[in-house]
Image (cartoon, rainbow, N blue to C red):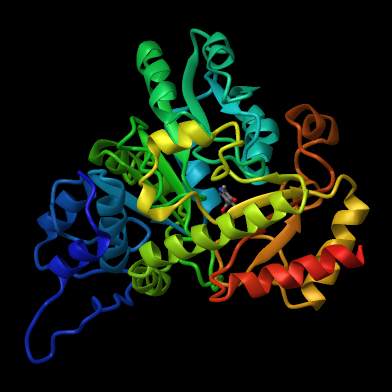
Length: 396
Ligand code: PLP
């Protein structure tokens, strides 16, 4: 069962005259032991509750990881220094040389580059498919396939992965289903829907402040223990542990995530409807005409809406660039990559966060060169924002 992350945090606090409302920040790289044997037991993973060294585990990281596990309904979680660290460590923990991965063709550009270019040096093969075509997914599976990798809502095309159906395929072929849920925290709970591992870029909605990069891996205790194993754990050995000072600041921001997601979704739906009425080509999974609308409805927690990402098509990169520059001057938001910030951010995906994807593959996946992805902010007067955008469209 998933539970409210803040309830979990509540259980961890110490009450009393000097009880702090936020867990104390652990500002140490190493930890003391009173008995040498306990240290050895900790190295072997046999001393529950002991901390050894902060690249392995740290109390502040554990508070945040426990809150994330409560949010996802997983037994455990591990926090990383970036979303890419969460993704690459999970993949390399599951796959070895000679293995094969089936991956959504549309994924965040960094993930695409890792799977398209980088894992080749480990002799890991990847087949990219349209993840919404379940027949293609199943046909791509080979005897050496180890994993299906996708994003709940893909970046930047906002396709919706049918997680229960992908979990059924994974189950039939004894594969691991790894899902990046960066776009839809609280809205979609991939582990509850059958995924084995859920990864996040916490840089985005979870932290929501754009003041750091961070990531998370939520999964079974067995998987998280294997990642942090001192002899063979990818996270322990590659070392992308999150700084505990950052963990404690992200933990405070998680307390407002549910309210932020509601407001991001409400504003995104409002703008999507206005763009649609204005005859602008708009992509938003919350519009009934979206191909993934029904799949998303089946999986989502409706109180949090359809998420804060929308995409419009300006057809050419030049028109997209011009509109973004006008919108920035008009105060609609910032021309910047990333998402999940309290201000609206927009960028031309083909020339920014998906520029790692070769142009012919961009065309194959249906990524228009004029696509502008908006991460809609927490604006209190979204009609006013729409009026500004309308004025900008008129200037084009
Ligand atoms: N996953 C998705 C869906 C993303 O959009 C991003 C970054 O934009 C990442 C992962 C990578 O996260 P980070 O930049 O925190 O490494």
